[in-house]
Image 1 (cartoon, rainbow, N blue to C red):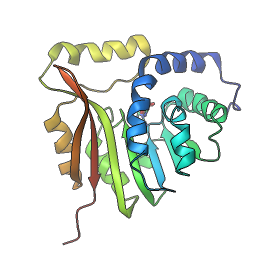
Image 2 (image 1 turned 90 degrees about the vertical axis):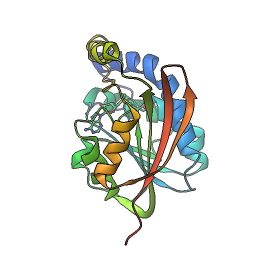
Image 3 (image 1 turned 135 degrees about the vertical axis):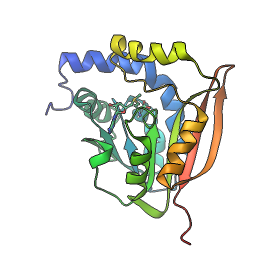
Length: 215
Ligand SMILES: C[S@@+](CC[C@H](N)C(=O)[O-])C[C@H]1O[C@@H](n2cnc3c(N)ncnc32)[C@H](O)[C@@H]1O
């Protein structure tokens, strides 16, 4: 495994592209979620990517004394993530882990967070059900991502093409009914779906979910 600061060139180039395209926007999403967490919360970040978005929120992570496990299946991103966390002086708070959400055993967590990572998974409902079992009793599941208001066959066609060019996995075009269905299929109650920002065609939203009350 590369040591922090010695990231292979290919990984660094992919991470550079990723940070330019995604991290500016998603760091504002992270900030909104992190500020909601209780002091000292243990959080699982599913799909931490290069860690750039989380590193830009280092002030909140430190002030709240958060303890984060950052999971990702992409070895290039995880290598860059280690280096980014070192630079942000977050190694005492965030542990990057190479692995898939479906295989992760850990917790209990006070929060599980999917930032732009839930609806790109092959089976979002299975991922929600899996991580819900890792939550502490009062824990919450958070997800932030883009929703499209109306069906867009053009975008559905263009997204995989954009992945090919940028190497960034943008996931499928997401519509609200599909997102809600993933939570319903997982048996997890969606208690909030708020809009952080909206345009005519799409909106950036924050979802909060919890385990249903025991009958
Ligand atoms: C669009 S990026 C979002 C990164 C970061 N959360 C952010 O918002 O800036 C989605 C990330 O999910 C990761 N990912 C995809 N499938 C995964 C899986 N099965 N388990 C964990 N991470 C996964 C990808 O490698 C990628 O880094």
